[in-house]
Length: 309
View 1 (spheres, rainbow, N blue to C red):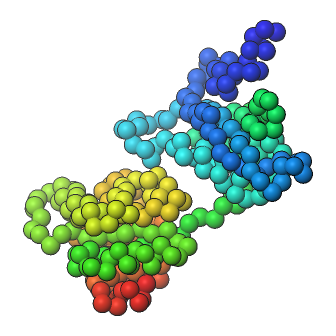
View 2: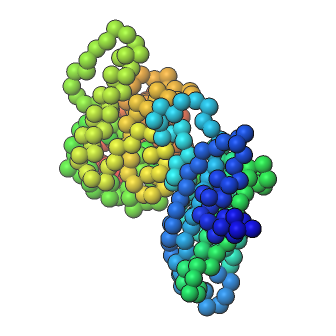
């Protein structure tokens, strides 16, 4: 009984360890003491204002069958937990912590890696102590989760080298940020001779790295432009209003269905990433369009960019 009482008030990670089966060891990631202001509660005194709510979440994961290679796209991101909390709080005003905990657990279990989720939620302003609930949900017992948060459809903007150096670049970004869609910026290589290799795969990497060097040039033009090279980073940036500058090597080389175009055709390569992220549209400034775009793509001159964006 003493052990049971101890576990009842222990952190969810302790309960996870106590419930572990030695024949089925699991990895865990956790979020501890995450406190945010939320409008939640069934009492009239709780309506119309926020109160502090604390979240502790532990996620048990299936072992990764392949080497991680220090690759962020192969693991469950911690952002998955915080985004599950924020997404559920943004959907509806809820009366019960139990409802919120259930929705958070199911949203996390909708990802491929989690096997079991422990969620503890506590109100910190309702009394002298913390008032809360804790639930455990397993993948095999979870109902099907229907995500209600819309998938972001970005604007992909390709910038020629002349466009990168254009004095109006900050004003273009100002105008794009006034819209509701996230922004992914793409560039080609700089106007400099690139090293040459007789080996095709080696040359492909050289050409991709030449684009990435120019991505950093663009990042230096405006501090809002953040170089991103993984799907996880780009997904996070789209959800949090950050402008991404695409560094293509990782996504291109890791893709299950890589682009057939050469990295030297930078506009066509940018069109590939626009399709990958289901872009709402793509705008090319200061360069020609590919022969077959197959997407809502428009080309505009540098002088017309401010009025056309």
